[in-house]
Image (cartoon, rainbow, N blue to C red; front, side):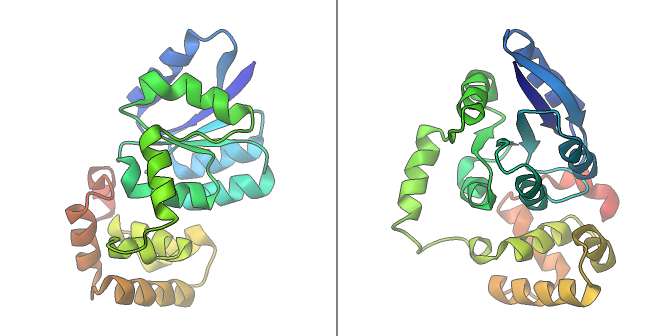
Length: 218
């Protein structure tokens, strides 16, 4: 029996995933989380074989969740679920330690195959993603500026885009405000931006995040 844990802040998505897996005799959903912080607690509780992790949730950043999970349970696979196309985030997530990337649009057709693949120790990539991964080996030009951010810089960037304050980001990442401020300065320079408002405009322009989920932070 493959024990699946689901972390997604949309109840309807979790219900849909559970419905798909309920028809699979050797798969069982054993835990759910609706935020990054709940996901972290779920990860630490163990008891799962495959983690389905949403890319955009309130609370703990997805990159941090991947790294913390891999530190504690390096052999337990993580399958990223995203509403965003593979060309936006897939390579970064896989580099961070994820074992596969699946868009929610394709999940009904590919979910079971992807879970089986990663549960057996493999990596899951759609044909389109596999092609992109190959291209990444040879092409570095014409990338959007945010692709040059380090993982830490990207975490701060995504938090600022959601309207979080430096003090809140520092607490979530267990770093000093001075360190977070340094990351902010670096990422602004790399993106050629000057303010938090510019960051929000940049992410809206490139459709990097679902800002509607974070309106309360604005």
